[in-house]
Length: 337
Image (cartoon, rainbow, N blue to C red; front, side, top):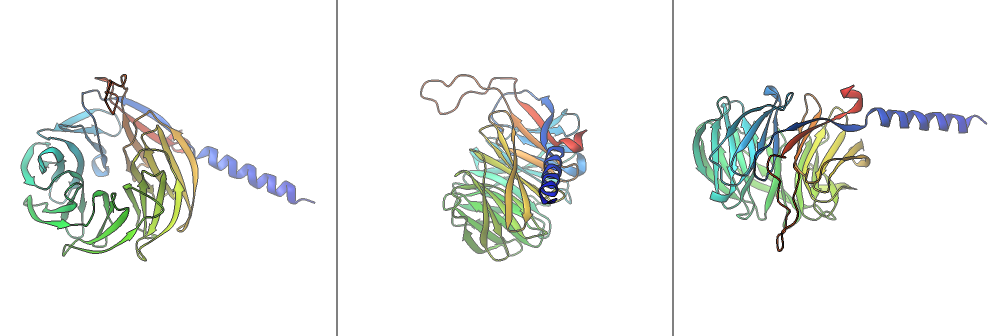
C-alpha cells in the first residue's frame, strides 16, 4: 500500500534535482564590433576565450567579458588552436587558405602558414605536439609543427571536414560533413586509420569527446546528435537537438553533453550510461547562438550572438546590426547561486 507514496517521493526528488541543476544565462557582456563570427575557443589556464570575428580573433576575459586584445590580419576567421607548450596560437584564415601563428601573450602575428582551400576548424594534439587544420573544400587537414610554424603535409581525408577533437591518446577525430562520416587520424604518422558512418545522423558538424568512456558527440544539421563509440567505430545512440547546430561540448563532471543551435536553443543531453542518453532540458538563447565553448574547469558554457536587421531582398541571411555582438555565460543554477 505504500508503493504509490514511495514512487511519488522518488519522482518529486528527481524533479527537484533536475530543477536545481537547470542551466540559465547568468551574464551577458556586450563586446560590439562589426562582422560575423565563428568558433568560440576557451583557454582555461588563462581564463580567456578566443572568438573568431571575420577578419580577426577577439581575446576575451572569461570572468569580466573584457576585451584583452585581438589577433589581426585574418581573412575569413574560423577556428583557433592553443599550443601552450610552445607559447603559440594558430588561427585559420579561410579566405586566403592560410593559418596565422601568433604569440599567446602579446597576440602579435608571428607568421603565416600555407594551408588549403576553406581552412576552417583547427586543433592542437598534445601527444604528437602537432596542429591539425580542417580544410573543408580541400577535403584535407594541414599538419603543422607548432614550434617552427612550418607545415608538415596536407593529409587527404576523403571528405569535407568540419570540427575535430584530440583524444589525448595519439588519435584525432573529425566529422566529414558531406558524406556523414567520422574519420580517425593517427596524429604521429600522420595518416587516416579508419572511418565510420554517423547514420542516421546527416551532416555532422560540431564535435565533443568523452575520453573516459571513449565516446564522440557529433552535432548534426539533420537535427540529432550522434554518439559514437570510437573504439568500436560505431554509433551507439542518437538524441534530438535544435536546428542549425554548430557547437558541441561535454562536461565530464556532470555527464552532460551540449549542442548550441542557430534557432536560439542550447540542447542539454545527459549521459545515463555510455550507450544511453536523454534530453535533460532545452535552454533558450538568442537567435544565432550556434557556436559555443565549454570551460571544463569552471563548467561554464560560453555562446555568442548579436541582433539582426531585416532580410534584404535576395539575401540568404539577415545583416548583423553593428555594435550588438555579445557574449553570454550559461551556468547551472545550483553552480551560479
